[in-house]
Length: 398
Image 1 (cartoon, rainbow, N blue to C red):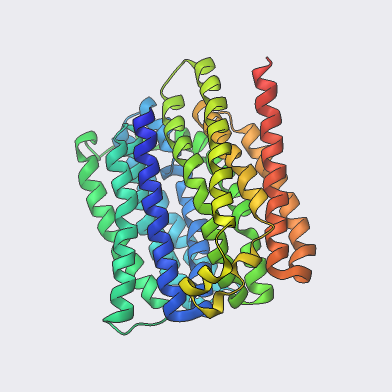
Image 2 (spheres, rainbow, N blue to C red):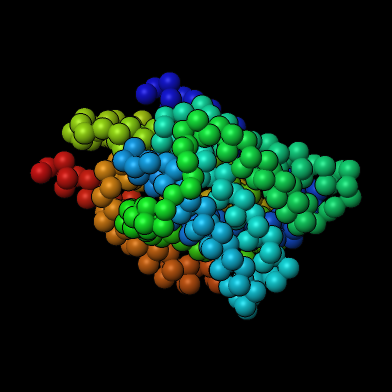
């Protein structure tokens, strides 16, 4: 398990670096306004993906060992197409969303979803190295595509990110499809088989994604409030800061990924409980050390790296540090509950976080802008983690 965690940690570190590099290139080349537009686009694509993942996302890690892959793929593919079409229609009529971004969001969401289905199948089959490669491939292609648009094709706006993303996820979908071909039998399944698998997937996928959607609201709801109320400039600055802080989560997320696969494929639940505690402790200590190192970085470094327009990056997220640290525990505890198919504690903890976030951000963001956003997020993370720790402690004492 240690080797799998190290491999996943390396892949997530590389992913974080590539995401940072993309953000850096856009920020320095195009400035806060375009960076804010890209952030809004990415955040909206995430919402599309979370709905697509009801049938084709990480829940497959739990379902694949208990079913036939070829019977799962057809419903997952069809669902991804349907979600993208619904998203396209919705975004066209959403009053504050830029109409020009509707088609790109739907297209990127669909291509990313298809690649994600293949990646999750590999993960469920414990092909962790291949799964990690598929997670890195589109980011590497995105980085190359953005650089190509800026410095060769003379595209200097949000379209640079859009073009790069469309090409990247199309190629990743093809490569990942080739990887899973040895695990897939005949895709021509009957209507009754598709219906049966749909019921099974919805039973687990809906609850899984309800947890994930609530978590996404915890992580990104206030992005919309900050951007729409205060402007894309503030969102662009703040997004740089939060991307740096959230990079420390690659530690608990790597542990959580492997722990989820392990728990989904075992009947030794008591052993997994003990392992959960150990991983949570390691995660908390490691994330605390990483956040301390980030805190020691002088503000001048941010100005030098990102440009003068981002001189407030460190100041903007100063109240977010405690929340990032505390929420590292949630990631590890959450992987245990995902692996056992027990979604109630995850739902309630994230719901508590969302309620706290909506209330606190409504008061704090208009008055304190970026600092208010960071404080609201910290209060949300603390509420969600505290409740999940309570549930896990009660389960240990049974």
